[in-house]
Length: 266
Image 1: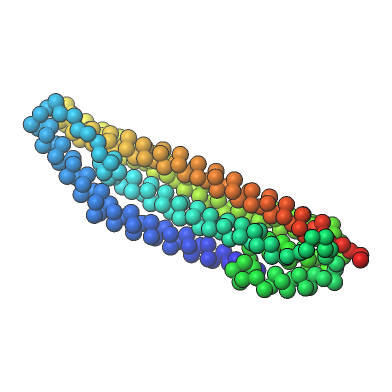
Image 2 (image 1 turned 30 degrees about the vertical axis):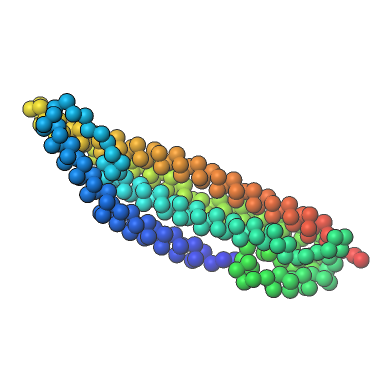
């Protein structure tokens, strides 16, 4: 039995809502108040000392709405990857548990397939939808029906290939987030430059604070977006590598522990 896709969808929605609430709370209670206080103190220092150079704090760099949205998306992506990593650990636990428990040198005859299927049915309920039990069940069912080792092998490897395709398609949301983060950074760049240009008339009179703040929005949003994108792409590549290796390990296990021990005639 395959896991209902509704569970994955529900998790992604809940993870997004929790990310929004968590990040917004941190921004309201800490980031923006500290950033405003820091900027106000810098303005006062600059009025007293024209040579004073403000030091950018982390709160000032993160204070704008674009950076907030980027961090929300990053936490959302991390939650999704954590969910997939937990799924990988469950799959690995099944491989390590050796669910069939076939003795060395023992062959599986077509009339034995029901017995081994009952062993798989006795596994814990959360394991039934995982790749290895599904592939074994399908291979045993086909072997019992056709008495063909080739048919059983084809079915088992077909399920593994379908799982590889599913895992790749499941990364679509993460790929979208990896695209959306720099896109939001670009939006912040355009907004910041627009704000800076709208304050250009004040710069003529010697007040460049509006221009510098607008450019700060532009550069800070791009900076955070690029940093988060680099990190997210690295983690995505690692996740994809682990998933591909898991499917290959499952296929190898099936060949060594199931397929080669099938015997059509005693």
